[in-house]
View: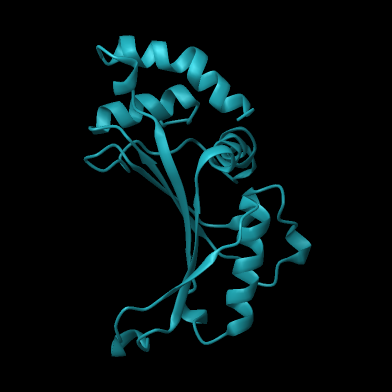
Length: 180
């Protein structure tokens, strides 16, 4: 794996995190296990073209073919039937995961309008982080003129940390711009 972020993690961040979190072994240092990008189609659930459009944009952003998610059970209030396609998701591991995170941190955050940083309240108990973006145009692969309908996306960064503090320390060392 020849990704700058991964090399930086191995050489600089692991010793710093080990010292900061008072860990005895390098194997206890938290790391990112996977990144899941999820898009729900919402009110456009009947429009097959919209789902294909979302699939194409996720393919451009991640470089990996997305999977369509289906409803597990019918919900009449939302007009959803069982096994109806309601979303699209991609799970990234390894090199693609680090490439995506590097692009997110260095390029995409800077392209978001009125960006002041990400909140540090979106950690769960295990140190995983969930981030929602309102528009997909923050990514450089998406051209504004080519988009029919804009959509948001949810990014879940799954870590091996065992607490919120360890997860936040890992992501802040990676370069996530948390709001002070």
